[in-house]
Image (cartoon, rainbow, N blue to C red):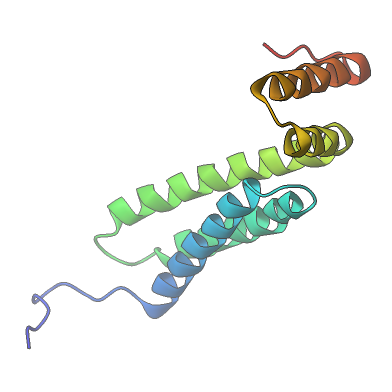
Amino acid sequence: MTEPAKGAAPMPATLRRYSLLLVLSLLVAWIASSMPFPYRFAVLPAAFASGIFVTLALVATIGVGRVAVLRVLLAMGGVFSIMLSIAGVAWVVFAQESAAHDQCLRSALTHRGELQCEQEYRDALESRYGISLP
């Protein structure tokens, strides 16, 4: 059995645990973001949990040597968590229109029907919020 290199300290168990929980919560949030309504709202708690785990993991790296790359990866996970949180808040704000859009897309049988759903969604956002999508 191979022994670890001398001078290389193993990663603390708490850091490994928080990193694993971060990856799992980001994966759950990413999967939930592609689900139909109302399951898409699971993004918010999963993204919030990933924000907590990234903070705990970054705090756990304090005093641990040779973890610069891990810190960069954790920071990238934090950015991804923030992006998913913003998307989750947007889905909550535009829930009525997005739910109607999802329902319309599920019932559309042709490409023309999907295009009509997209146009109805754009019209609903523009009439209610004054947002014009490209």
